[in-house]
Image 1 (cartoon, rainbow, N blue to C red):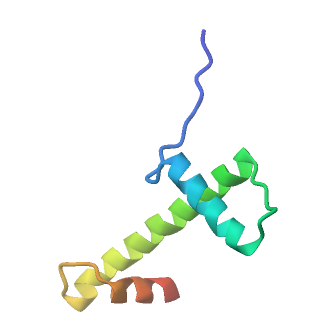
Image 2: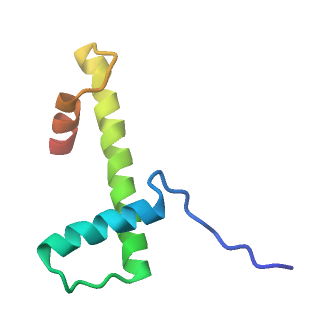
Length: 80
C-alpha cells in the first residue's frame, strides 16, 4: 500500500509567502537563513491567525448592522 502524505492547503502560495518572509527578513538582517520547516510553521501560524481575524471581523457585521467588512472591523477584531 503506498504512503499517503498529508498536505496542508494554504490560501497563500508557498513560494509567494516564502519570498515575502525572506524579503522582510532581509530588511532586518541580511544574513538570516530560513529552513523549509521554519517557513512552513510560520505560514501555518500566519494563515491560522488570518482566518481567526476574518472570522472575528465577519462576526462583528451583525453587531454594527453592516454588510461589508471594513478596516474598522479588523481593528476591533485584533484587539479582541
